Length: 493
Image (tube, rainbow, N blue to C red; front, side, top):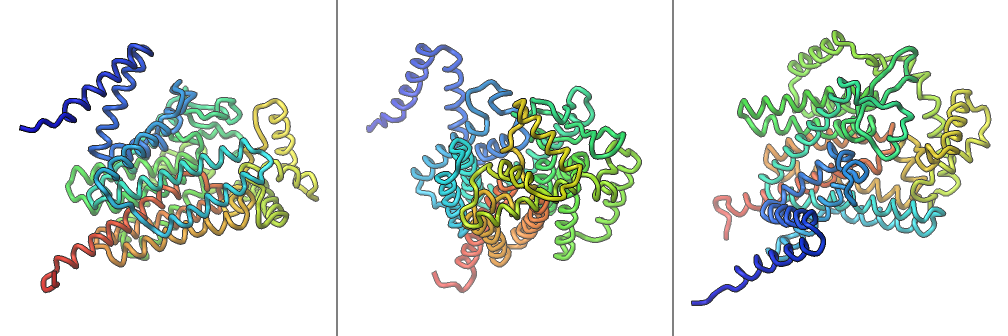
């Protein structure tokens, strides 16, 4: 009789190592090691656990899981990402699993190359390396979604459920921020520098009105709303995918929570983007018109009766022309001028702000409101409350072009183009449920493009999530089509 020594040796070796860690570094580290090994084993058995933890750490727990809140040496997102990546890599090699491929990956590598070149040329080497690290983490998130969710249609469905569940939790956090007075933060609170849980109080948008703009655990109202725009269409796919009454009730509840989150962020561009997404789904006949009109009437009526402070911010023509529009106009014009100075190489990561302020000093006929903003920023920079590097152009094209030059812009545009192409392939080869998901992801991507006109979103997780899901869907659709072809009657085998 042959005895497999590995069956006994491996557990004994792991146990001995953990015992030694506990003896050398104390019980706390030993407990952490045990939990890490247990989580690693769970991710090895079901990689979707690791992927969901990565998405959760990057959405609802982005701030709660950060170093300065948790007190840990690294953030929850980094722990989840490293553990999931290592476990997935080991599992893929041991089981010889194929790697998900898409032309997107070429564009992503070109984008990283543009960022690397900017590191060499950037005057702020520390900021430049930080930027390179952050973009690598985002591309690794895309890679994990593409490979784990792309394993099968069942895992892809689980990944979609995980994403909408994470953003529903984020919306619940946002609702608590709005309703609980203790979770309100002044817009100039120093805690916002590192990130903090709470609704940001806006006293500048509407005269005499204190607006509480929820952040949903993402620390920034606009990015919170933009992420919800990307997730909401996925609920439509899940609604038709799972026909049970309990499942549909949960999906409708999630969609309702996420819609409330968009409204209570008081982000006008997100509302416009959502309207574009819905219009696309109407054109594709994915949403019946009459139920949509009824739902829209109920939502509009409910918010009108509730009338939360700041609702006028979403539809006020006066605010649209007099609020932040003059400043955003100059942020855009300054960006265009900076592109003209270095159209090919760019200025490097986080270099828009310092160069914009220099341009603003030389600009003529600057409105009084913009000059007042400039004085306020320079005063906060002098006291260490703010940095010029945090100033952004509120436009993704300008952001990428100013920072990473024409190569970076073309590569980023290539990523978006190949997302559309992957979804087109999925719609061509997929079965009806996969075709519906492809349309929902196209609607979400159109929403991103609208949001990108009003926000600097290259570092937001929105587009990188969509890139991963599009790649995974492409793989599932093509592989299922090949399986159907092989098993079709009359096909020679």
